[in-house]
Every structure is written in structure tokens, then in C-alpha cells.
Length: 404
Ligand SMILES: *Cc1c(COP(=O)(O)O)cnc(C)c1O
Image (tube, rainbow, N blue to C red; front, side):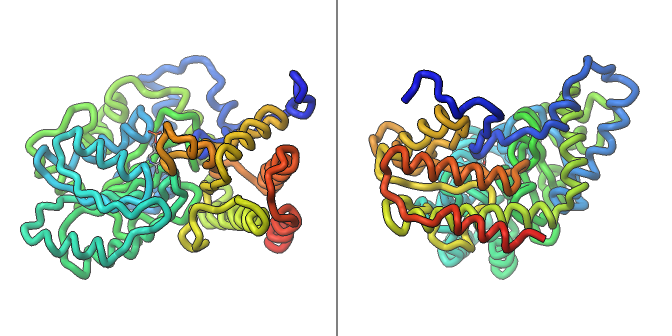
């Protein structure tokens, strides 16, 4: 390999599962002088963000905007509806469920984790058993990670709603849609989700720094029943601000709001149904290529059943250390950055170097995904990693078959 890889110049592609590719329109919108935060355009614009955010989450409920990443939204959501000593049920199918459970424990909330391992979606029978045992209704919420970004498993939220209803269990259904909103179909009201959390740097295409907590009337009642809520996380003034400051618990995140405005314009110009269909087709092209590579070699998709796979992130394994070798090669030689494996093997284990992920969320189109797959195909060949043939041909046929 050369010191200066000669194919790496040009526009690079950050194909990791967040932060995602930032559209030029978003970058341009953020490139401006500091605005007045008391009066004028910014204040006017902010009022308009609220209905457009609710359209993305498919809710007529409320939204609170936080200056934080997704971890902040996790804590915000819990802080509004729960108190120390309360209990949550956490069906886990990857690292992020554990992360939210740990956040709850840090607030003095007891978390009952149902670990489903790293390749399986929720088992409704198991969840039902845990809820049925809870005669006293001590479980105040089920923390449901829609798409777990570590394993790339997509869970069935409507089925979880149906289960809670069948059992007559009053727990709130709280969904983490950080990796799915703006990528995979998510319909807060139709699916009976009480609280939905997301952040801006994945399907919403804005640099990390804003997060959103959507909540319905049932969740608002749970908030009203709390003896106290930390002032910064309290969603009441944010969702119904009397003065502009209250939207953000302080100074507005001025440039992020302009970026978000541009992103929401892109999103609603394209339309939610079209966005979901685009992600589904591009994911299909990726899986088809991966299956072809895997037919003669070690490459494997973490999730076997396509119906359970995220349309925004794909977790993959090779024999260690080939995952790391491949990531290094495509980054150094082609300007293509793939995601590291997360949570699929202990971080200190050698095996970790087998896992990696493709991020395909947000501002991605057919030529980018074909470029991603072409780059990986070249990497497999350059590194002599055994793989099946015909992956690019197969992906190309998926794209060709679906284009108008
Ligand atoms: C990215 C992600 C998070 C964490 O968000 P941060 O912004 O990194 O705090 C939580 N849950 C899911 C499903 C995610 O994809």
C-alpha cells in the first residue's frame, strides 16, 4: 500500500450509523452569523418546527426539544414520568436497551431486563409472563428500543402495544426511535406509543446536539402525578412555552435550529412514505449483496430474518480480524468509513475485530449505496478475504427493479 492512497481524494462517505451524512442544504443553513434570540426570524421559525417534527413522528401529541444527544433524551423521558423506586421492564435485543436501562438505574429506577441476546427480536411470550407476574402494577413503563443500532434488529412495537392492551397492563410504552425515525416506518399515535425519544443526527440529518421527546396525554398525566421533576428536563415549559427561552430551558441552539429547519424541509418535500420506501429499497440492495458475498466465505448478516432487520443500519461479521482490516482498507484507500462493531463481542476480545456495520440512514441514495457496496467488494478482493461472487450484480438488479 502507498503512503498516499491515490483513490481516496474526492468526496468521502461516512457510512456509520450516526452521525449520518449531513446534506449540503443543512450545512448551508447553519453557516450564518449569530442571530438575535429574543425577536425576529429565529423565534418565528421555531414555532414552525414543532408541527413539522410531530409530522415526522406521526403524532398529534406534544414535543419537547432538548439541547442534548440521545442519551439526554433517554434521561429526559424517564425524568418526567418516573421517580426513584419505580420499576421499568426492558426487553433487550442489543446494547442500546442496556444503555437506557442503566440510565434508569442511575435515576434510582429499578430496571428488569429481559435479555434476548444479540440476534433475536422480542419474545412476546416472555414479555407477557413478566407483565402478568406484576400483579401490583409496579412496572410503570416498558422501555422499547425500536431499532437497536448495535445488532440492527428491528422490533415490533405495535405487537408490544397489543400485548399491553390484552393484558390490561397500564405501563407506559416508551420507544427509543433514535435509529429509526426518518428511516424505518414509525407511527407514534397509530402504534399507541406514549413516549417516543429521538435525536437529530441519524435519520434527521442534523449534526449531533438536538434531541426530542414526544409524549401523549397519558404520559402527560404520569408527568402531572410526579412529586417533582428536575427543572432542566421538565417537558412542561418546553412543550408549552410562555416565553421563547422556555423552549430550550435557556439559550436557543440557534444554528442547530436552522439546520433542523432545512432538514425538515427536505424530509417533508420527499414525504415520509417515500423516505421509508427509499430506505427499504436501499437496505434490500445491501442485504442482497451481503447474502451473495456470504455464499462463499465468512461474511454473515447478524440478523437472519429480513423482516427483523433495520432499514438504516446493518450489522455484519467476518472472521476476526477481517472486519477491522476491511474497514481500514476502504477508509484509507477509498474515503469510505464503515461503522465499528458495537456490543456484538466484548470490547477487549480479539473477536471484536470481526464485526462491523454499515450505516445507511438519512441522506443516502442509490449511487451512494452502490458506491458503498462497490468499495466493500474491492476491499474484500484486495485483502483476499474469501467471498461469493455476483454481489454487485445482485444489488444493481434490486436498484434497477425498483427505480421508476
Ligand atoms: C445512537 C443511539 C442512541 C444514543 O444516542 P446518542 O446521541 O449517541 O446519545 C440510543 N439509542 C439508539 C437506538 C441509537 O441508535
